Image 1 (tube, helix red, strand yellow):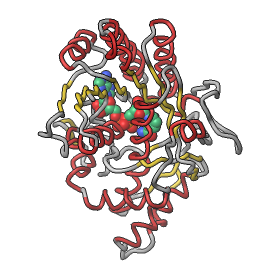
Image 2 (cartoon, helix red, strand yellow; image 1 turned 135 degrees about the vertical axis):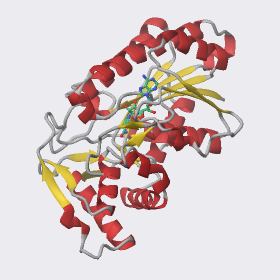
Image 3 (spheres, protein in one colour; image 1 turned 90 degrees about the horizontal axis):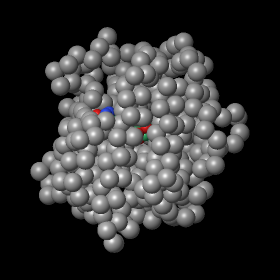
Image 4 (cartoon, helix red, strand yellow; image 1 turned 180 degrees about the vertical axis):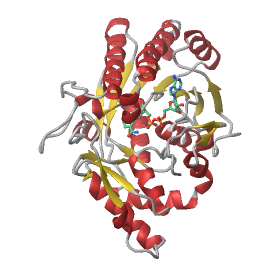
Length: 352
Ligand code: NAD
């Protein structure tokens, strides 16, 4: 299979590409702009493998997208390129509108033109899989869970831009017959996760005995899914999902943020004891994020029932693997941590 993966140098995209290239023998063209969040080092295991190709390009560049479709001739598109960090979207929404909305529109138009030009079995088999988030559904109270029929209620610039992109994809299916499928997934964690996100930030700060910032009262709840389980869900949806449908993906692993941070501290204490004492002492509550959604949870019954997908990792096994990966792969995270990437100082971690 020939798959064009956008955002393949990002956290989830690179896990997907590693799986497709190394375990499934697929031919993959990664299309990635290499923003601060894109990192070719995350694809080091795929470099030089037959079937792996990389194109540095912006999905909002229509001419380059059309040329990429023509040259590569994909059987499917898996669209993950996005601006993805909620805090950054609050500080400045423009790139989120440009990539998540205009970029998705541009990619859809290129895919539509390409699909229109296909014939017979190739046209029948073509798929456009749009990878989205459960954050489009807003915030839950103490009970209930998001599913494919939950009304949209995005509350951050990030989630609003992802909601817009979901609507565009569904409209391109309904209006132009583009064979699209949408997935909405809960919070992912795992190896190669950019260290501005909660779990890697906590692991690395804890290793260096720095403060472990927790928003508000730490009682915000997320439904955590190990990234490799998400990847298997995406491939199952691509191969066996029904066109025009949506699949909600989640790990049935709800945890309070504070509990997540405490778990990381405890694992690190066991693996690399800190002479100054238990790392929970480093937990520091900081002012809450504006509009911070209280609880997310996913009812994944549809993908479980229709496609037989289930997460393989529990939160406990996934988080243990993740902590271990960061301990073993300082070469990957140290340059990012020092705020140097591609020669640019990011200024993300002023005290790092
Ligand atoms: P990420 O920020 O780690 O990676 C995004 C990638 O997209 C980067 O490689 C970046 O260089 C690339 N990119 C950004 N703008 C681009 C542009 N204009 N053109 C081409 N490439 C561009 O994100 P992630 O966490 O891997 O998320 C991937 C997708 O999955 C996103 O669409 C996100 O909304 C969705 N998602 C993420 C989560 C999560 O927990 N991380 C959960 C559900 C859904």
